[in-house]
Image (cartoon, rainbow, N blue to C red):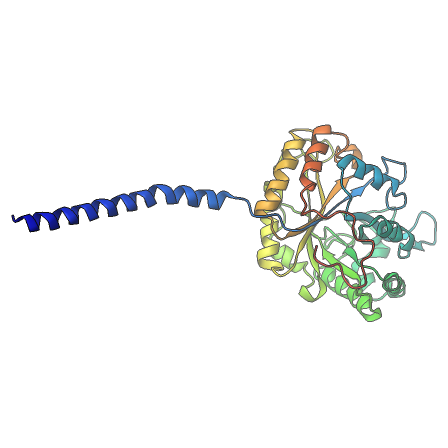
Length: 364
């Protein structure tokens, strides 16, 4: 072999070695870099947050006494952008029943504080029962309550500011008088009743009501069952889910379950199949302390919301000692601290909404 040939050969060998080293370097570095990229959490999406607060702070439930909200805010260290409350159609402790009008004063309290009202409005009476023959879905559909609904909607329009209207929630269960299969209600009547009430609001121009459709997460749900209760995109502004980690409470005993185990299946059904264009609010959310670590559950909840529940744009904690179950945050120092840390993220909006104009609730 000539000197010239040996030189060419050495050059080829050197080039091959360099190329091999480069490929080996890419093979070693790229997977690690890609792994880091895939496991990095996305930036949090701007969201509302708030609570449905009981009477434990002052003896009167907010928003009728907003000192409860102020005390709750003091514990959390941040203002609430949402305050939830509820109303039935009528009070029937004495006869005849008395219709309950639009809560102007209570909503003014929430607005002056700087939050957006969330009203869970129920086609039932107080005291409540799953069997109320005067409050069947057919009564809503056939116009029995049209005059009342029109007055309520007109007052909502005249109030003029955005609020969430969560009408007849948890409709796939069997504990409320508007659930199909109880109280004489028939299949298909829930959607018909919802559309009828919505149409009355539209007819009087109450566009500041933002309509929230809200099933309860449940193993008994199916895609078909949820679909059958969905009024349609033209009648729904936001979707919603209620969900609780009950734990081994004697009231409704369950196994201790993570946030993801509770919400994952129905969340995917709603955002991928039923209403893929709608934002979501978790309108009732809570964890018991019995049976596990409530603080760790809340920490994981915030991580899951950021990572896997990107369509959720509002979260409301159920801070009420319902049937003596330990839903409130303030009874558990570690849970309170975990929740406070979670909502300190700048993405969670504070009470900056006293100046909102007309129209529906905007995305945060």
